[in-house]
Each structure stands twice: as structure tokens, then as C-alpha cells.
Length: 238
Image (cartoon, rainbow, N blue to C red; front, side, top):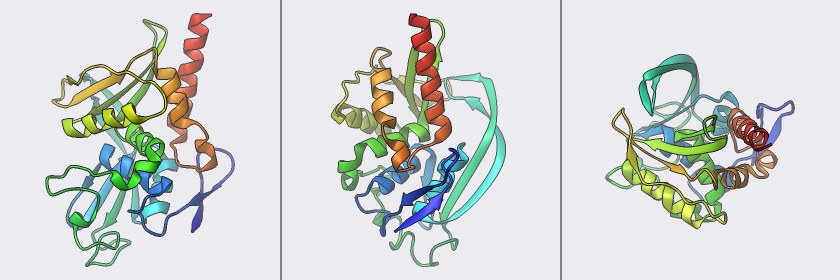
């Protein structure tokens, strides 16, 4: 099954949509990376938030649901003295919207989803699609930036769930690119974060978005941010 969705580029792309959004598939891995990174799973509803419209439309094509847009202001995760305003797209799945009233993505209750009774994620079904899973996680709870002080690219993950970040670190350990990272630290907002080493960030980011244009499973604004940061770093070296 496939659906045509805009990707933020000039042309629309056929998104391959799995028959089961919980089965092992690149699109389902990307979806659940986003859900874990910036979403919430309840008994009868899933909500996932992104600031990239094209990515939000892709997630809706994969799982259905209702998509809403608003402009929000929030504190920067690393420094709550800094506030940023951005577009926010919220995809609501279930709750009587896009699914039957008695099931959520075809399952009876949240325990049928890749989440255990304590709210921790189980990603074993997506083990063959770690790149898409990591890309969804990065777009859900990660940052990409150019560090002007050192002329390097920074990639980090930020979340209030320490165990989720430990799982992200395990996924990075298993990826084919050598990407060492720092220790988990606390943010000023009470969450946790860690960063990929600056020397490894370009290779890791390049691998993460390699060939993603062929599937449409990516946020165009995030890929542009990575490309711009890499170009800045190269110019700095020159």
C-alpha cells in the first residue's frame, strides 16, 4: 500500500505504507521513533508532535488520525532562559478519530502497542530498520546545530525519560557508523540529554539521512539543517 504525500521538496513522493503500523517496516519504525521522541501513548489515543509539516503528513499517511496545526512558544530544552516560537503539528490517533472506538491501531488497548506496562518502549519488531527508527527519534527529541565556537556539527538527544535515551544510545552502538557519545547529563528543565562526539557527528548524520529521499521518511527541514551545518563546518575548516 502506498500514498502520495508532499515531502517538502518540489515533487510529491509515493510513501510506502505498511498494512500494519506495528509490523517490522521502515515506515512503522520511523513512526514509532517519532512517537517515542515527541509523543504520548494513552489507553485509547496516541499523540505525536512535530514542527515539520511534511513529516507530520507522512506520519498521518502511515497511521491515520487527525492532524492539527498551531504556533507555540516554548523554553529551549538546554537553557530555559531562551524561548523560541515555532509551528507545531499534532497528530492524534484513536480517541474515536481515524480508528474504531474499541481499538487503537487495531489493538485492544495500549498494551498491544510496542510499549510495556510501565510506559517503556519495546522496539524489537523494528530491529531491521534501525536507521529509520533512529531518524524518527532524532526528529522527535534530537537537535542538529552548527557550533560556531568550534566550527563543528552538533547532534544531541534530549528527553525527560532517561531510559529512552539509554535505548537510543544502544541503537547508536549498533549502527554501522562509529559514533561515540558523551555521558547522560541533566538539562535545566529537569530532563536528560547526551551528544554524539563532534568528530563523529558528520558521519553519523550523513548515514542517518542517506537515501531518505527515496522513501520520504524524513523531515525536510531537519535534513536541510544537517546539510547547512555540514557546509558551515566545511567552510570553517577551509
